[in-house]
Image (cartoon, rainbow, N blue to C red; front, side, top):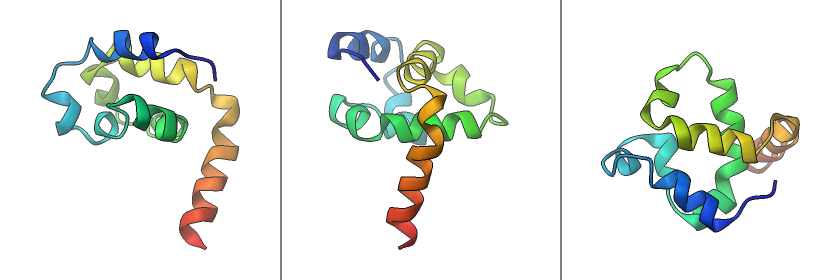
Length: 88
């Protein structure tokens, strides 16, 4: 998971302003701090929610960037850790 703040800001700049607060998955990663803390979890969830095709259509460049910097190979570990914290 190697990405820079500049790459994040460039991807973020492609999102319509209203979408940043209106849509749940975007709201969870709409700042540098949030993407550093929750980006991997949100990417894992987005891959699992593939039935919601409109999620990508809201911000395709940002969506693709997020999934690229947080690869699927980490999803199971991230989801297991998240579940353990919230179900304990």
